[in-house]
Image 1 (cartoon, rainbow, N blue to C red):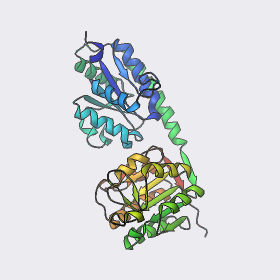
Image 2: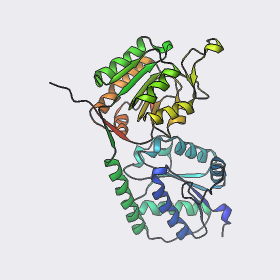
Image 3: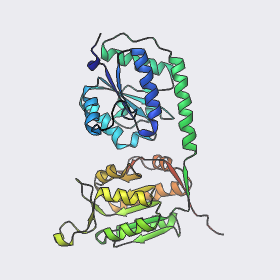
Image 4: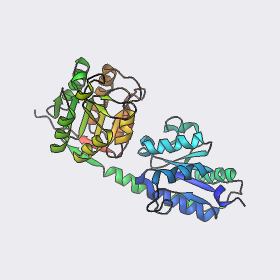
Length: 349
């Protein structure tokens, strides 16, 4: 029999899908007996006072198998992708487990290159057990796969109902802002797209400063914030003045402070219409949905993408659906937090 330290399974998941992670953990421990299953949110794998990141690192390093729970919500979340990538680098067997409407052929690269199963299918669960057993070098245990799949199906219905009850914001107010450095013609394209799509619902700021941004988010609820501002590629810091300005004149806002302001507003979507803004997106995705890019992107590319994306939003499509319907080849990438729909102001005849 393999030693306990050699029989560790790591389940990667978003917090809203903890219940499914715990169901899988319960069944795996029961059926594989001495299996050690790590679920960060179960209150047992990480004890109060533990260093959260260090415990995650150790658990993943010692794991033989990593199960990645994949849904439309989770696949865009930074930590799930970080953990999956870390498992791949460590040569751990990574198994994507699709659920709640996510299909294996819809997974993004590189997850769709891996052996994938559907959680609510008995034959898929059996393949999951066979794969774990192969890695651990033990016989695959007999299990009540039909009953297990039925239990998971009930959870999927619960998640589906939660999505149907998603937040719908009437008459969303939008902040479309740029620093003075980025207030030229390309920013005019962004303004035109938003004002055309959401008439009389857009506040435009062309010489935004850190103080002005704090004031706006502190006293007004902006449901969507569209920014054309330089972002430090390493720290995620917003840079309201050119980086070559006199040090005494530099005007910046840290990623943490920006996240606090967004939480206060509270903002439901941030679009970072600037190059290499993915680090800032990673830092703020725990408080709101963020769309950003890790590459170079021109103002014309952003405006072209925005014309399609914002049109879908204005039609009443949810954020996740609108993003999915927009050009998948665009460099703009969604960091999911919580799905939401925006109901535009009804135009008077």
